[in-house]
Amino acid sequence: GAGVSQSPSNKVTEKGKDVELRCDPISGHTALYWYRQSLGQGLEFLIYFQGNSAPDKSGLPSDRFSAERTGGSVSTLTIQRTQQEDSAVYLCASSSPSTTQYFGPGTRLTVL
Amino acid sequence: SQKIEQNSEALNIQEGKTATLTCNYTNYSPAYLQWYRQDPGRGPVFLLLIRENEKEKRKERLKVTFDTTLKQSLFHITASQPADSATYLCALEWRVGEYGNKLVFGAGTILRVKS
Image (cartoon, rainbow over all chains, first blue to last red; front, side, top):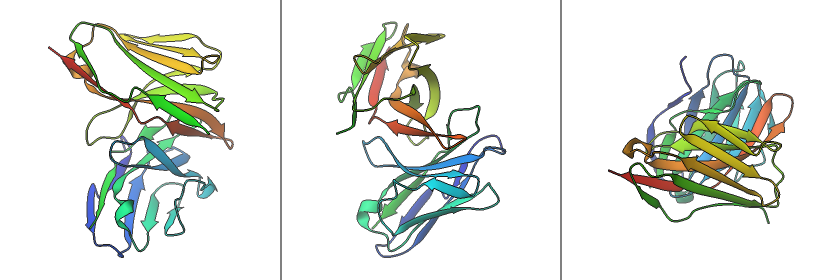
């Protein structure tokens, strides 16, 4: 595709529910990244994929957060038993060895 | 501790003037420093990258300086326009693995250009 796409654009859920956020990277980009941006804050790194493996998961806040990537393309970020502090915009980015990171529009998650 | 600091206050300037945004960092030794623009409801958009061995980089009305001794980068927009109004993010970059790069972002500075 022309750019990184994410779905859904907005997600409202109740505390304790599980959510899945999807990222479609730019075709051919081998690296994929997830970030979280809370209101008025900078982007917080969550996890990095190279192909289907995740050599750096250091930013995942707790074991309620997990991510996978299949076929070297689409990635899903899953948050189990959501809490109100999980409310944020979740941004995905992709890159190739010769490019910087290109960001998607983000998914705004609201946990009630 | 490691920190990246940008102007915490919004920067309000008049159209046509030069906007200067600051990024200071401590306890990092990045290979690169990047500047991104972010509009409300959108993801960041890459603007400029400067390497640790470069002092200055220009692109059209944009100029970035990088002082690794002071651990500071300055981002200038000359002849500013209302369309330049946005949040500008500074990011430090390292290579990770064979093909990836890791970015650590500052909180951003809001720029408002008034006509």
